[in-house]
Length: 380
Ligand SMILES: *[C@@H]1O[C@H](CO)[C@@H](O)[C@H](O)[C@H]1NC(C)=O
Ligand SMILES: *[C@@H]1O[C@H](CO)[C@@H](O)[C@H](O)[C@H]1NC(C)=O
Ligand SMILES: *[C@@H]1O[C@H](CO)[C@@H](O)[C@H](O)[C@H]1NC(C)=O
Image (tube, rainbow, N blue to C red; front, side):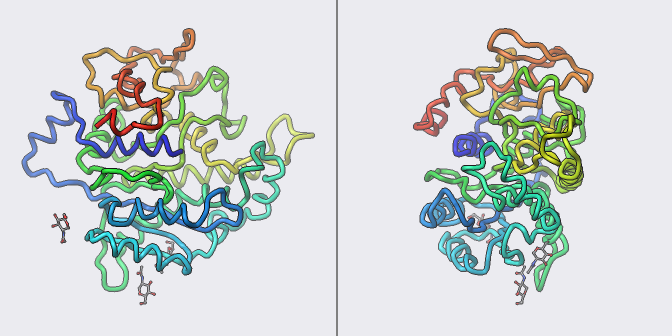
């Protein structure tokens, strides 16, 4: 997770442009361009069996919201006990971006789309192959994220108390524990970069910008994923990441609807062949639901691939700007009409549009990110 966060910081945080790309030209030509308004949404609920200490969370939160944190409007869900900490970190930052804290939910199980499934979440833990490091509360917070993201956007659009409503152009979920290391990013994500990346992805996919959805990828899909069909249930592979994701308000609303429709379907239907397996699909890990959504709607998703995996993709033609190539669209699945071929340890996708999919333009650059330490140095 930490590695992916860093890649994201690099991806969205740097003015790291190639010359002559279309989206950039468009931005440059438009003298009246105003930066899009961006909202980050996050949460911190202390878990009973957290792997990490209170001190660790405090440090990470300080990297996010404190004096060395980022500049971006933030909507933050937490408990009344932690509210003061969050507020004081933000106050100490000396920054002027908005922080809205919502303490309505005492635990992630109180979040409406999760509440009805409480008993099943407990039950699921018994057949989680990673049960030693997971717990039902963790499932709940993971699956609450899309709803919390959408609600924050809508809440701020309506306005509250004496604040007028604000309509954001983009909003992203951002794990509160993502900023594990001290970083050098100010305005993050960089509004110009976000705009360019969405424009580019939209053109490549021929899908309206507001419908595109950004998800980072831990790795590319594997051979075994080729045979996936929706009736098989959530895709149990570390492909999409849940630590950071988002879109425009339109894209977020679509995603949230699709996410819970799928979640509710899988949690109420049994895998087939049915007995003697579990009585319903395992939905405890958001990654697996994200994967299934991407496989079902590949045209809407794009992202950036984790550094260690970049080598799995064939570099695109060098004429393609490196940051464009850093966009990775999800692989088309056979059932979705597009062929998928694999050669040796390298994977690529057919269709003559490889540049849209490839993650390692500068194989050198992303490849060089493999070492966790010194990542920023290499890229900066
Ligand atoms: C907030 O800070 C930024 C940069 O520090 C500055 O450009 C901007 O004008 C400030 N906005 C307000 C409302 O003070
Ligand atoms: C917190 O968010 C929820 C969901 O949007 C909303 O119903 C509630 O009113 C919010 N609480 C406050 C104090 O704004
Ligand atoms: C609005 O004001 C009430 C009363 O002061 C407060 O409890 C609530 O948290 C405020 N809402 C937000 C979103 O700040």
